[in-house]
Image 1: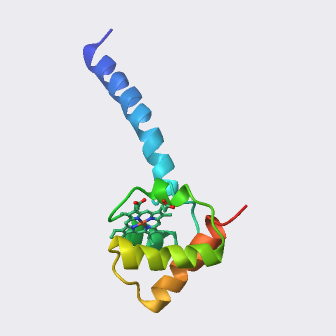
Image 2 (image 1 turned 45 degrees about the vertical axis):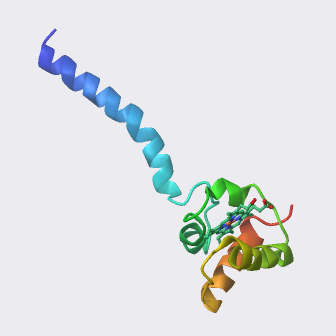
Length: 100
Ligand code: HEC
């Protein structure tokens, strides 16, 4: 067996092994947030302080998310969101991480 060809095949196998999870992330760059309108805004607003698992762990109604956003600002030090951005994020949370 030719060493160059072996190295090439090994590299190709390695690339394939590592490319697979990366491709899954390409489909959803904001994982673990579910894909959807507002995922990007939510990602950047919430990633500063804690894992997005903290966000996806909850499944709340729109009213509770609304209160949670206020609580995040008043007691947890989150920067107040612009009203239109807050609306996008609240819609996103209530729709995609809403109550069952
Ligand atoms: C400035 C920091 C900061 C930002 C930004 C932030 N959080 Fe938090 N958040 C916290 C802290 C600190 C806690 C933990 C509080 C505790 O449990 O003591 C927390 C906890 C939570 C919890 C768990 C609440 C519970 O019942 O324990 C949820 C849900 C949450 N955050 C949602 C969000 C969402 C959604 C965003 C983005 C819109 C966000 N957070 C952005 C600081 C932040």
